[in-house]
Image (cartoon, rainbow over all chains, first blue to last red; front, side, top):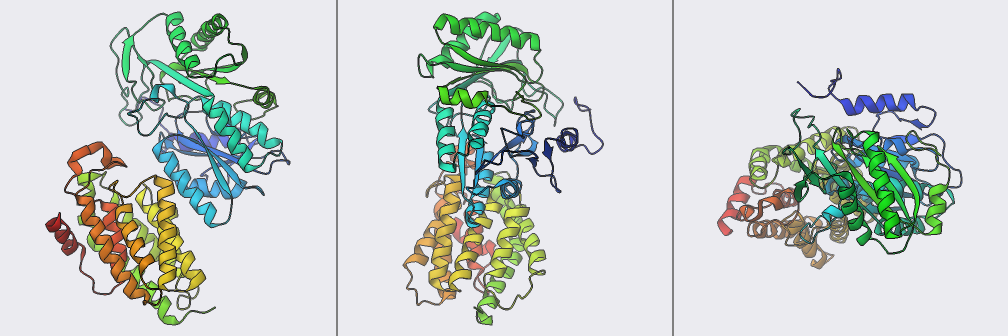
Length: 330
Length: 225
């Protein structure tokens, strides 16, 4: 028996997505074939279409961020699996503007390859396409990890800010440039006290002994390089904050995202944010804006991530610009 | 401009022989990929050629355009095959079809098409020669096509390129994987040729009627490895 509620088709991701498109029908639409979602209402001033995508299991990422002021399209794969290049290609054709389309890609081999194949196909059709690779996960920042840092929580902030930038009429190269600059100034760390339940086996993706936690965990059940003793929240957040700040430019205001990984209570997340704000105050780092909640999850993992992005006035202005999507609105 | 019917017949024959060779070779390709990868390469290749066959049947005027069967095969591999190597074959064929559509079936068009395909594949996968991937068969074949006199008949140029691709396959057997799924196996892939490289060499060989079958080729690779 599966640990998850089973649908008649056995394909939870597709059924949830179809329903998602219905429920949020005023914001998004799902073209026939249902390989992607597009925004119904986007700014007329955009000259570049913004598209992101990746495996399902991280909801509300990415479909929740399709709409005014953010993504023009999202392309979901199966749970934890890259979408097919055809989905990315067709979604790109659907949302390309006069200056083409920008792909926001989390740094995973499968996503890089499938978005890359789609980009080659677009080039073949004469449609300009550029990419911003999001690789903000500090835990995978090691010389012996050839694939490089993973893309995690920073993706949400990059999608928000680039969406607002695209609405100002910014061109393809300039948007790509801004995106790359945002990524270099953004780092994340995640910890978990228990793994997600594997949909295939119904068992936890990994098990931890009592009193242990995984420090530096990925969003697909990738284990951290080390398992450490479970410590009180202030100690954990202090360590995370110190490490994140060490990887960012000094004396710069930050936007923070305290993000639940799927099975973490809001009580825990707000308490973690409280500690983060305290740590930042002690470090003399201005906390410009904060998000707390479930923005990029890992099925039912019990844990949270902290993302910090160092921002200049332009990035902050773009972050503050209005947004109206199923999962983010102000 | 209408090409002579013989050019279109040539590319059709080439793709048809590739489809047949993929089916005949599937057990060997699967066995090979089970040793160094996840075992789906043979199935992906046959899925691609089957999807291509369905598209060839829908082409409006199969007799006049030598790029048409290549483009139909390219789109079948790009649209309908999962995994990585199938769509990469699609990119190679897409580039080849574009060059032949523009310049006709000439050795210069083949050189341009293979070079464009190699560039695309390397941009997508970051693989360099020596990484034990299909690039190790594609890069030497492309070099040969570039250095062959443009006046050489296209079929002859493809025959020389095929031999160079098989040499590249033999070289992959001596390499340790650094990319893709085989990279997790480290030294255990030594002695085994890369299935994707085998696929590229098989594609090139199929330009000639009556070329040796896959089993004979792989025996030769193992004998030299």
